[in-house]
Image (cartoon, rainbow, N blue to C red; front, side):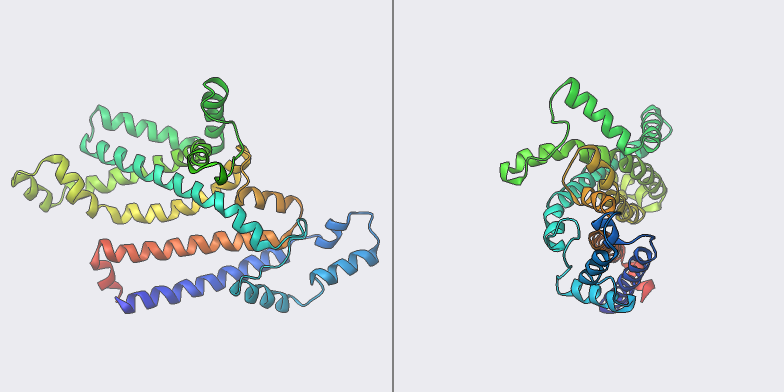
Length: 316
């Protein structure tokens, strides 16, 4: 197990380094000048040059890359051009909303997908299976921002059960905060749950054909107990794979959904920073999202070995 983890950790570190290089280079080749953008089109060239020196934009790219990476390692992400505040404070403030939103959406996705997928597999080729798979096909086709608008129209405008947008803050209570995040989380979860439900159904159907399932049923175990105790665990490897990828999609999807619901999260910060050409904030936020995705994939690899020891054995 230690060799397995060591190999995965080395892959994790190599991927993080590669991602940092790509993020830095992509933002470096963007046209325009951040100092000129901040000073305005009519600013004097001397003032623009002075601001560029202050921001370190005159340094060689390799030196700026090393300063950026070494700063990330010690938690010094620099100052935002537009907000004149430490980037770390801005990011941490927005993560307090984005991470709970993504986790809430992932929890809804998992519960909906497992229930629908297992139920559809247990009713294979019957009305329940066909109906649910038809609904999941619609769910896949619907963009999450459009579904978010429908949720606002129904639950905020007509029923007036939820606010149409905004976030009261965690200081107002956890209940109020979760209530404000429920509609955004649901709009993110519907599409991902539809995809995961279809994959869960296929994986469960494949495991149901195995000999040990027939043996369990022959020993008198009920269909429900067989499905949830034996079949689902053996079907979880492809499901966990997709769940890891979906968590990355949920993090990226918050950029759009947070703007629809006017939530002060990381996605909205990225959107505003792109508009302000605040490249230092964009660079650190994108790298943070990339790191989250890479770490999630690492956790998924470790879960493979927990769910199915054959994966660990074959890798070693």
